[in-house]
Image (cartoon, rainbow, N blue to C red; front, side, top):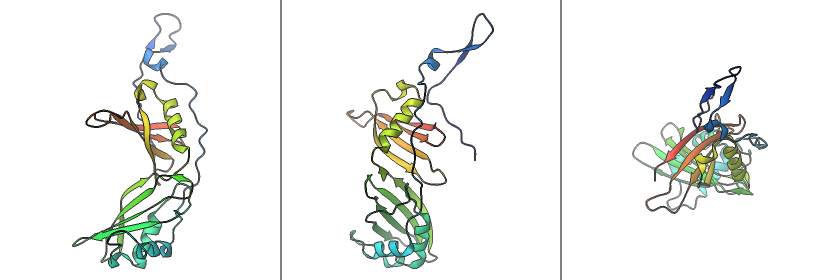
Length: 219
């Protein structure tokens, strides 16, 4: 599948009024950084859990209410183990499980962080207890190696017009799992404003050295 980068800053090309007609950059082009940072080396992602480890985490849950018995099955644990990725292929130091069931479907949450990483991964699944079918409802994957968020910030700032992030700082970073591996979402915020913080969420593809999209956040 071909990915297209969505530019954060509009660029225009004007032709020289005289000479051989070679295009010259406009003022907006001249503001773009040169020599993008490309030295980020990512670890190999993987699915490190087996069904037994996740079943044990569900049965040993210390969350209020724990995990419903309907979710503590080999079928559910196997399906969840096949779905969970970590950025470096390592298991979390201490998986934490929680869940609840409604009239027809259940929700299962699994979270944790590998040793030496920052923040936690959180996977949320919708489960059909009758069939054991599992669907990923959301994945907030913030268990990143120490210092990676700062490297990602440097990469983003090397790829776009500095004015786009003026006055903003990275407040969080998360990884997008396969098939979008190699992509990260950085949240930039200004902070301090009443009624919320202005900013933008930027998706950057490290492997292709491209900014894929930016989503402004209203103040």
